[in-house]
Image (tube, rainbow, N blue to C red; front, side):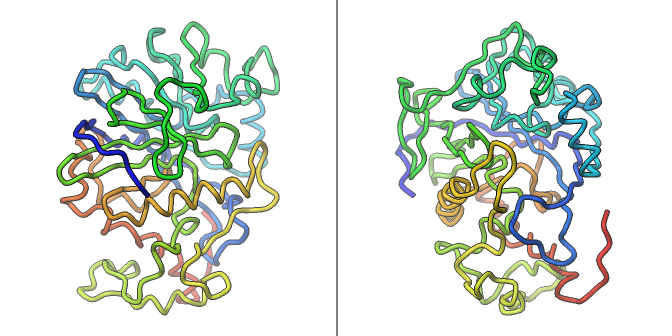
Amino acid sequence: MELPLSRSTVTVRIIDTTSRIIVPNDFTESTIKGAEFLDCPAFSFLIEHPSGRRLLFDLGLRPDYQNLPPIIQKYFSENDAKVSVEKGVSQLLAEDGVDPSSIEGIIWSHWHYDHVGDPSTFPSNTALIVGPGFRETFVPGYPSNPGSPILESDYTGRELKEVDFANDENRTTVGNFNAIDYFGDRSFYILDAPGHTIGHLCALARTTADPESFILMGADACHHSAEMRPSRWLPLPSKISPHPLEPDSPGPCPGSIFEHMLRNGDSKIPIYGQKRPGMIFSNPDIAEETIEKLQEADAKGNIFVVIAHDSHLKGTVDFFPKYANDFLRQGWDVKTKWKFLSDFKQALLGEETHSP
């Protein structure tokens, strides 16, 4: 994955939005015993440019999720979804000294309820930035359109800016991603990452210049790390360290114990494939193309790929108000890369499965 050179950087803070979502894993073509449910946090990101400009990437779940449109409430009831959230992102920012009015734009990776939060808690001068096809598919929102999954109040009274990867003056490419150089100095890119749904976006932030390091905000390009690992760029290791099943073990874990879980016994393709047919507004074939781009970045060694619902980051990563720019020196990527394999412990040990 070729990355444009620059000395310009931004600071990134990963926000644990206090959301917790427990849903059946309906995103992959199969599941492994003991991992039929996803127990997910929802991460947001605060991006700060040296000029003082600030962006948010995603907002997690809004605290008053009971006020989401009826189509979302129907999803909750039909899928036995368990959701909880303590505070909105605007409140979390304010409590730690970041004025919500200083945020120039909120980037929605996509329209799903656990990413859109409540933009109405930000001033009207905060723009809402969405992916291609968003207006045509989702506007107007509820209640003008009773079947819309978004609320009119999410965008009313503020600029609703739809990203145009074909015509934006700052359009470029980053690796195999179509991208927009948001600040115009190669410090932060919005990435075209379709498939999970119409107009799905990721983002890439240059966090240090020497040595170069980046954080890739993966949103829902995948929901579980087993959708992108292993890969042809990052095969299943023969020895996995830290040990994903025994975190206190001084020795590595033999990769061979997971070989029976591999699709077609192939140590160079992800354990999980995309579900077919996909969900509404999704395209599994395009989603796998996006995941392949993510995989190439994931193997670089200096790009920390953070998907929105990776519970395995907790206990290793420093969250807001702390900064994430020093992730390379602290080894967060190495420490968390294969930690997701711990989800398959029940299958390995033959323990009884319990749904949440």
